[in-house]
Amino acid sequence: MTNFISYNQWLNEMITPTINKHMSHAEDLVFLGGKEGLQWVIGMFKQLYTKLKSDTEKDQIKLSVKFDGAPSVFGWSSFLGLEKPGIAIKGLFAKDRKIIFNNEDIDKFYSKQPDLVNKLRFMLKYISFIEIPAGEIWQGDFLFDKTTLKLEKDYYVFHPNTIVYKIKKDSDIGKKIGNADIGVVWHTRYTGTSLDDISAKYNTKVHELNNHSKIFMTDPYIASLAGIVTLTEEEKDAFNKSILKIEDEAKNLYDAKGYKEIIDDAIFISLFKIFQNLLIKRNIRVKDSEYFLNEFVKFVNERYDKEFEEKKTEKAKNSIITKKQQILDKIEQNEELKIIVSLILEITELKDIFIKKLNNIGKFETYLETRSGKYLSTGQEGFAVSDIHGNVIKLVDRYDFSFANFSPNIVKGWTK
Image (tube, rainbow, N blue to C red; front, side, top):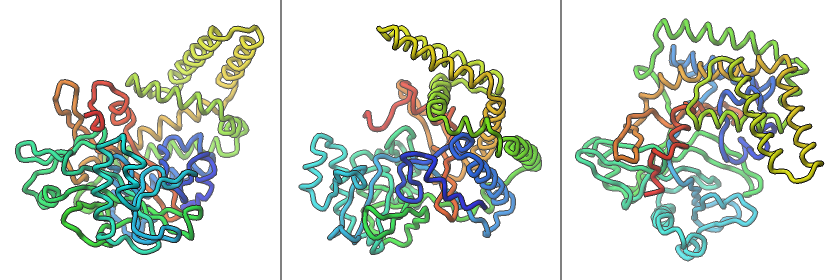
């Protein structure tokens, strides 16, 4: 597989092998990753296909379930520059670091967020007991604390973010959860000489930690798919046809001048991503590249026309006209753009095949809660695939989970 070291260069603020801020969607590599990104995502799909088909242990990729936990938490027992066990949330890698060693630190930083204070107090209480390996910082996501864990009939229920998780109370996991003060899923470990010189690996295993009955801990990694997920002959044929089409289309882009013009145009890509998110918010699934581009043109016109009306001076209005025309010219004249959109749609469809197959491997039942109080069955938040070089992408049904994230009709756990 390609040694995709440039992965942390094309995503601006993302520093994948350094700090796990977020991951990119597989289809976004078409315009974010260039030739290397395309080759990487194609290779990743082939390896994932092999893993599902034969469950080979020789794969260079790791597959994990994405948990919809919140907030993200960092913890350590001992690390250079951090004199004793502690925790942090998003402020660990900021310039003005918010590092927690005691309850006074929690009150100082987060006194206006009582629910968060409660979680952090529990986390801090147990962090030294679980014995995170020396010289490492682990990152995870909160799942529940004992004030947010609910018992509904025969199930324990927790709702940290968008997805509602359920587990039978008399199951092995359910019994552990019922006894715990807090739950967390660990997904990333950091090593380095300081907080300014650190690298991430996606290989946490909770068996490395000291078990404590009051903190439920799990990891998202799937060691084997044997007997859990298999591809039918029809699905194998669909994959082979799809991957061949993707490879053929990608080859037409690798050295094309028009492709480089697109991936080097930050303004164009920004507009493109805003348009993608708008389709998701409106729950509009597009499978035809020509229709996609026609709708993109409408979006560009509407966006710049609105900006035009808001401008007061003639100079500002003329500037908007010029910017709009430059974007429209690129859409109309760039011969590679239709191939780019076609690839994005093809990769999205292929990704969805894998998501549907993988959705039954989660440890918990997953639901969405509507404003009317009903539970709707849903899939996992998504899946993450990482390689030996630290590159990581996510496989998420953006027209399912992401739409639920945007929808005002879906209750979010943090609003309760």
